[in-house]
Image 1 (cartoon, rainbow, N blue to C red):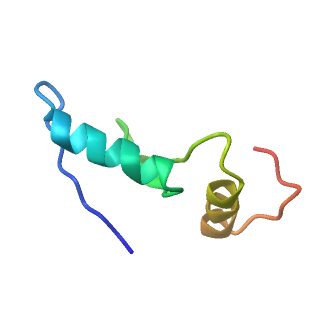
Image 2 (cartoon, rainbow, N blue to C red):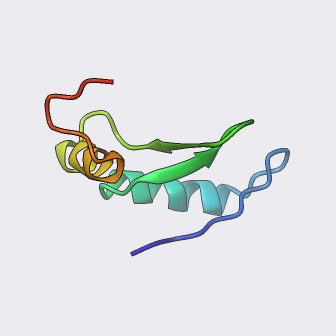
Image 3 (cartoon, helix red, strand yellow):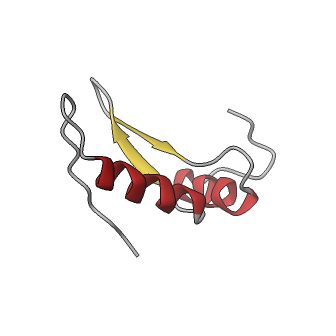
Amino acid sequence: MALYLSIHPANPQPRLLKQAAQWLNDGGLVAVPTDSSYAVVARLDDKDAADGLRRLRAVSYTHLT
């Protein structure tokens, strides 16, 4: 399942920030735009989310960076 949120950088809506935080708390992955690309983020303490990042990047479990 995917969720698209457009959050204004200068004046973010608290409701959307809470929704993104809940998505992360529920084990989801979030794509965050950077100046040159996107960063995919997850909670550090969520093993399932880390496994999702590895599947997305197509790297093995032993891959550290």
